Length: 128
Image (cartoon, rainbow, N blue to C red):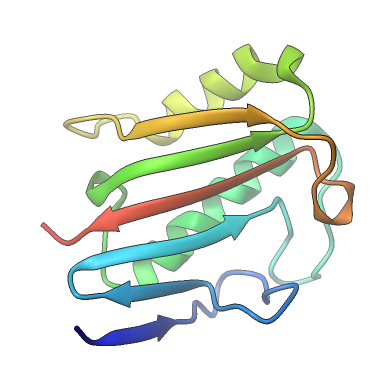
């Protein structure tokens, strides 16, 4: 199986020794995305801004791989405060509006995220 690193020009640089995503066969494994503005490299302030930017970064990586959000089969959400679950759900639903099938999903509350972020999302997509 061939493995290829995917780098998206419209997503923020990785914070460590990893790439935006890896294409392995027909499957794309997308690294966790924080609400970092790709132009400034700064984490946005506020939950809604961070979640929206995380989704924008995820979409940029999908685009760089020649894929669409409808090809996402699994997501994992990491949230700082489970009390934000409902608000995050609304933003998640808006991002995935129009997909034929919502991805499978896990959501966990975490003690801390890089840069003191409030939200992170990782995803797995399969070429249709």
